[in-house]
Length: 207
Length: 207
Length: 207
Image 1 (spheres, rainbow over the protein chains, first blue to last red):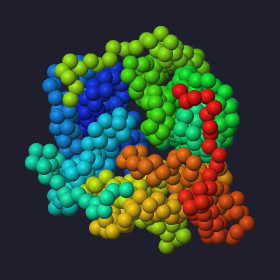
Image 2: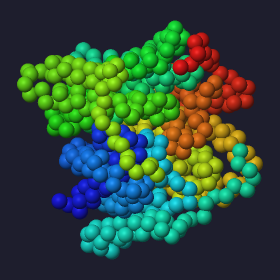
Image 3: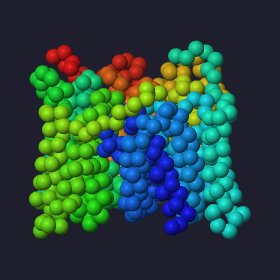
Image 4: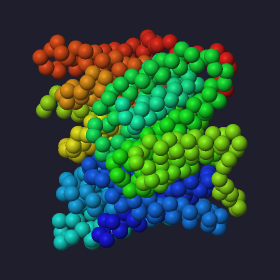
């Protein structure tokens, strides 16, 4: 299994867990859990593959990804009641999913020799779009664009580090590990210590 | 006209009716009716074609599909006030649209010799994504993920029946008819008799 | 630079301004501004390219588009507080973005010799989908489907004029200028003078 396949599997599994946790908050049935888990898990990577015209899409080439997402959904369906605070679990799981999905997307774009800006965008899209889809469809907590937290920022920073570091290393392993580290550290620091960028403050009253 | 083309036309027409009915609830103008009708009618099949890299997309190859969707929109624009309960009409029409779209998507994937899991997913996506798009964009009743009803479940079950039955028949006709029947029966039974899967019940208070 | 490339750049810049203005209403940070600006700016054209199977997608072939969208986001981040009524600015900017994006999409489909109906749809999709994505994701004012205003109608009319006029001109320049003019005039007239199509009126009480 290549490094990118491993990252894809890991991010599919963890994002599926987050999708299923959101489904548990909506009290769906087990097929609903699987549906939301799959949407969240493969949404970002699917968009990446469609945009880069990779054929077949990763989960059509290897349907086991869907099996992994469904397994995560079943796991959550039978165990979610054990987590006292599902929201907190969800948000922390999501940090790991992000930190794995961003290098997965970045790695694919690097392996296709895309220009730096496209590499950064593909890492960001792969990392952020699954969660965004989950939130838009289920109308639940919109983690990606939550005011005053680093999320897209963490993804952009991680992907940028990988893209800039890549020429100095013989293969993509260390740049992608740096990417995961930077992404996770920024996202987790934002949650734990309140790290953030200055937000736009309107001076006249909002209309 | 092939069987799949017939199913595509029928599902486009019926989904377009449901989209136009939602537009009537939002009191849009006739172009708004056509826009929502087209989005609902071709959304699922478009996603199927993009994911499977079928070129051209079915309604670009045959723009008559768009004409059919617009005709449905015009029909509803001038007659919807006759239905006393548009919501009930909408939900029952939607059961037929689902029962036609799922075999349409399943048939395409079968004809491309995709693995069983991909066949099931394509049937489900074709059946569920048009309605999901309609609901997400118009922010109206989210039929697809409504708690405690069979919808995605009906689509998955119908597509699975077709995929499993296909090897035992010389062509896809009977498996696709079975698919339509199972999908419609489960969805309609869910509405009429309250058939459902057990939903997830949180034991600790929701956070 | 070709005419279509110029239209694409102009529509990306103006749509990015509108996306960033919506981000300012949500008080996001600068990366959030850039994210929403990019989504709005390239959303419609990306969908057009995916549907028409143009490879690579326009902003992957020419990542400068993303740079332009980010520049618009930075510009708005530092100046939006100067606009007394951001909503009004947003809505008027959006009329220009629409009037540039519709001919951009129409021109691409014309250059690919698509049938008339597909040309009209591609103009409409390119013009309307970026703003629709922005509104669905940010859950802010849904400009595209606002009851009793011409928006999709303006796009359809403009694209239709270009498609019908094209055979009478040696190149696409004048048809696309007519397209921009018709689109803008209808949209602006709708805002300024209340031009509209009759909306559907339900006679029985809504259910």
